[in-house]
Image (cartoon, rainbow, N blue to C red; front, side):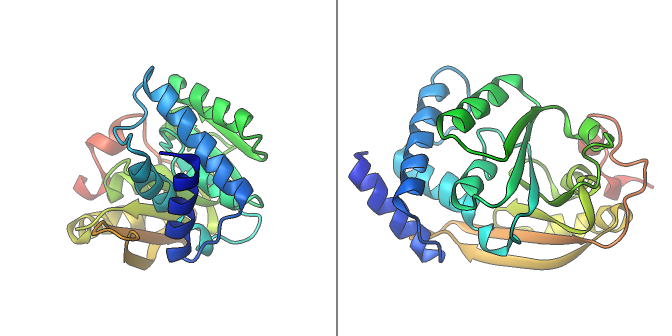
Length: 243
């Protein structure tokens, strides 16, 4: 895709979700895409490699949550992978402070290169398991928001995210369609961890049939110290399946 075509596509798509991109931001997204495609030949970062799909399914999808995030907020993006949604959020919201978390060091190296090449400030990439980070006093209950995209079912995801969020903070759970059963099965986990579903935002990505849901969970109580449990347990034994 030519740079001019890229610019027209991403600006138009962003405008449809109420975001106006400037030329600096467009250039950063374009350079990010080039790095993503280059590194993807060496390590598995994404199965989506068509530029128009990267724009829609990675970049635009990631920034759909931007308008709800308060000024100068702290955010942790758990299981960020190739940097979604954290890096696109940072590109359009220079005021926010972002921590990118991934359990694979190769991906963290890629993220650090993107951060360096795009000269992004107040953004850090960390190599760790989320269960370990959630027990670390430097990170536990330190963030205004914790977010994640396509990482785990909502019960497991809540055990990953809620311990990282401050009291009165939010987890932003980015999901596809058909979430009703998942929500039902996560009710106990959310309650036990100190959260409460506040809003479910349903929408379609621009010029597509792709359905998305964003589940906003408000943290109304401190998370019990026993959570998150040891690495691997939240995925194997979600709280909703326990006696």
